[in-house]
Image 1 (cartoon, rainbow, N blue to C red):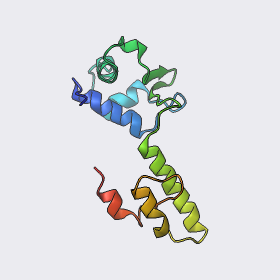
Image 2: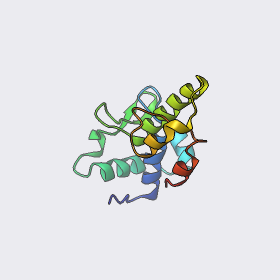
Image 3: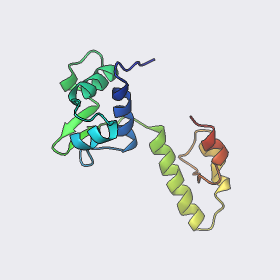
Length: 135
C-alpha cells in the first residue's frame, strides 16, 4: 500500500493522471496551485512528496513519472505502461463509432466488463451497472 505523506501529493497525482497531462499538455504551477487550493503555500514540496511516494529510492528531481516541461508539470506513463482508464476510454470511443454505424452497444458491453476491451467496446449507457460498480 502506498501512503502519501502529504494529502495534497495524492491529489496532485490524481490531477495529473485525470487531466491526461503530457509534455505538450502540462499543467502550469498556477493551474496546479488552483486545483490544489493551496493559496500561497509552495508547490514544490507537494510535488517532491508525490515523487518520493511513487519512487522512494530516487532524488525527487530524478523522477521517472512526474516531470516538468517548459509548459509545466505532467505525468509520464511511458510507452510500456498500460492504464485501464485509457483502455476503457478507447473502448467507449469504439462503441460510439460502432453504435453510430448501426450496431447495438449492448453487444459490446460484456467483454469490456470482463476486461477484454480490445475486441469489443462499451457505451456508458449500455454498461451503467458495470460503471457504477467501479470505485
